[in-house]
Amino acid sequence: MSETRAGRTRKTEKRVRLTAILILLLLFFMSGGGYVYAKYYSQSVKNGIAIASGVYFTANYAVESDSEEDFFESIVKTGYQGTDTDFIFEVRNYENNMLFNESTVVIPYSISFWLGGTPESAVYTVEYDGESKEINAGETGKATFSMHSIEGGRAAANKYTIRVDVEDGAKHTAVPVYAEVRTEAGAIINSVLRGKMILSTATQSGSYIESQMFVVSGDVTTDEEKFTEIQKLSEFTYEIRTVGELAGNEVTEELKLSWDPTVLEINLFDDAFQAWRSAEGKDIPDVDTNGWYYITVRVMPYSAETVGFFRGNEFAVKAVDWSTLHNYIKAEKYLESSEETE
Image 1 (cartoon, rainbow, N blue to C red):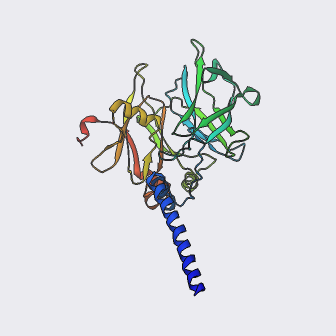
Image 2 (image 1 turned 30 degrees about the vertical axis):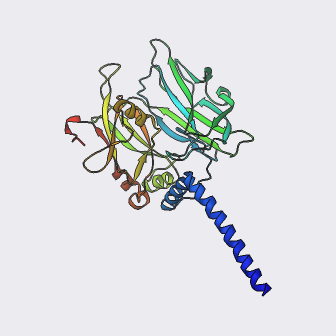
Image 3 (image 1 turned 45 degrees about the vertical axis):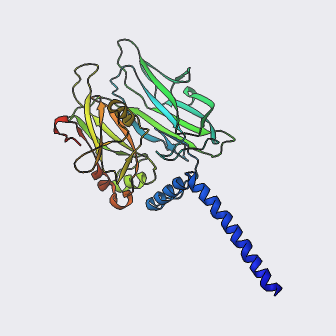
């Protein structure tokens, strides 16, 4: 009889513990955390990747690298004509539109910039929060900022403005700008981001759009190698290189960038999207008659425009190789009269 009562007591205790666990889970899901976790877990399974650790440390022109010789190479978004220009390098606390660091996560880091050659008739500098440092070639030419930090709580970026000031009357051929970002001692993660940034220069072609494709780092040549490399990235950089005749300092061309939203998801924090959003007063892209999303992008002749994308829900099913991936995105001249009213 006592054994029966003991058994009932154990069952009661188990039910109490189970009820407590269910209550905690209910509170968790009601707070919104369960939705974020469930959504990202589902997306992770579909994309064949591991569940994220919840700590993010990324950049717009650099990726994580274990080798001092491996720098992510990209064409900087600018209409560089050998005269004064500037662009922004960002250190970010987010992975994509939905995932960013919690408010308790503060990541200290150091960041260095240097040149891949000696500039002629130009001075390169980097500015952050009112402080400016000159950048020169090689190890001795590094401009380094130590003990900077990026805080969580919202998607944010620390922005470093790289300026190229050309002497009056001179013509300057750009040199590559290297960047290396290292987490400092005491950071919750240990990470090194490396990038190589190249200012575009003028070329000749019969078409306004010279080329358009996703860009990858490393010494890869075949389509198979390129697709293997891009599979390693969480954010893909789509690059549109332009040519054309300059008729004045303010001449731009409006391009239409469209994509299949089931395969690709635009980075809502990308400069191109934010510029379109500000100009159009919209929060989501337009939709064409094929169900593709699109935005318009203003570009200079002889320049390179880059736009960031993440995997869509059907990326793994539809984008099976390098060629098919590019079937789901396209840049072309924007003809407003040909667009149907949505």
